[in-house]
Amino acid sequence: MVDITNKFTYIFVILLFITSCIYGENYKAKVIGVTDGDTIKILRDDKVYKVRLYGIDAPEMSQKYGIESKNYLNSIIQMHKEVSIEEINIDRYKRIVAIVYVNSLDVNLDMIKKG
Image 1 (spheres, helix red, strand yellow):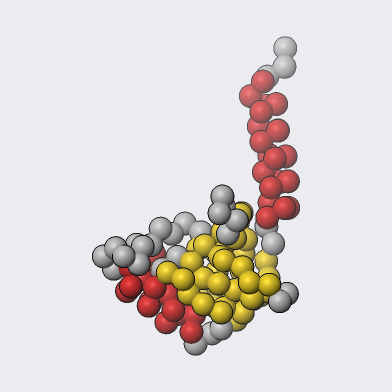
Image 2 (cartoon, rainbow, N blue to C red; image 1 turned 120 degrees about the vertical axis):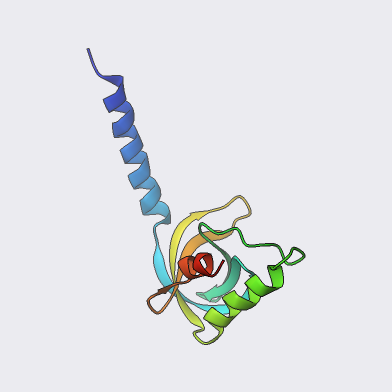
C-alpha cells in the first residue's frame, strides 16, 4: 500500500520549486516613488512597476499614522534610489510582492521594527 502523505508531500515540494523558479527573481531597480507605507514604484528596463513590500500592511494614507508610515519609508529609500528586489510573487492587482533591500538593509524588516 502506498502512503498518500508521501505523495502529497512530493507534489507539494515540486510545486513549491516550480513557483520559486517563476517568481524567485532578484534584481536591482531604481525607485521613482513611494506610494504609501508598503508600496513603492520602481523603474526597471524602461518600465514602471508597483512593488508591494512583502509581509507588511501599513496604514492607508487616510488612516492614523498613514502619512508617518509613508514618510518613514521614503526616508529610508530617498538617500539610496537604487534598491535590490527579491520577488516573492505577484498579487491580484498585478503588483510585484517583494522584499526590498537598500544596500544590506532589509527595508521590510526595518518598517516592521519601526512599527
